[in-house]
Amino acid sequence: MLTLFAAGCAEQEEEKTPQGAEPVIIGYPPWDDARANTFVLKQVLESEGYEVEAINADLGAVFQGVAQGDIDFYASAWLPTTQGLYWERYGNDLDYVKNISTGARIGLVVPTYVTIDSIDELNENKDKFNGDIQGIEPGAGIMATTETVVEEYNLDYKLRASSTVGMATELQDSIDNEEWMVVTLWQPHWAFARMDLKFLEDPENVYGDGDNLVIVARKDLSEDRPEVYEILSRYEMELSDIESIMLDLDQGMTSEEAAAKWIENNPEKVNEWLGE
Image (cartoon, rainbow, N blue to C red; front, side, top):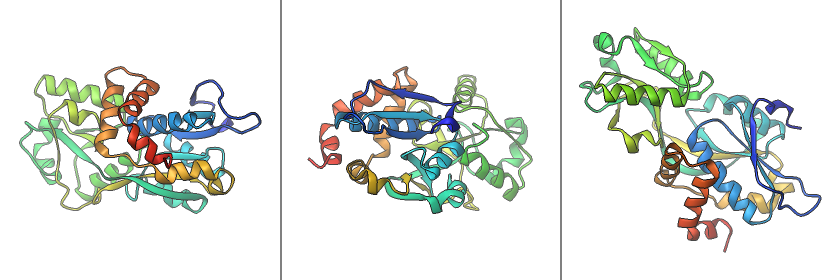
């Protein structure tokens, strides 16, 4: 069933599901906000006796897997803007379960010592930025939106694909040397807890007014796994909680460790999700 994700990885614990039950499959792309929500939900569901598999794949494969029914749900979709292209492609085959957070944001970000405040000031300062916008993985929604930003603002810049880790490392190196750098970044992200950063204003509003973090599920999940669906329908996470987990991930905790720490410190929220 999961041949689509052979290049991904499954992180799972020993089986807890009653004999004969299928495991719950959660798909997530390689970003820490998705890891945070995925592994909190994984452990919550495991506490209720389910076997859970967390499948890591690129974003397009996650959306496709949920739409095809190979994956039960994805717990951190950025909608309506950042991952909107994937919703347009697969939305008819997905269940928009609920918004779990509001106020998420994407855009171009610079260190606070950079003396410009708006995207439309980039061209006149091209030399200071070496004409580069440092991006992340090429399949990410923020990369597609930033390509539109380059066109709309007629920026004489090259958008460079990398990885999320690579982008953050280069950003930290630039700050250590007090160099100018502009990157594609989003909030929640642990970088805002560790570095002094600011979003550049977007007068053309290409990046939109903000996103929701959304659980999307396969169409028939509510029918054949109603108890799981009920937990998902009660699940909510503040952006600050997600960022706290992301910071633990950046500081070396595994996904399981960071999720377990948050769950231990927030039993009342977990009880609400479980309807207790």
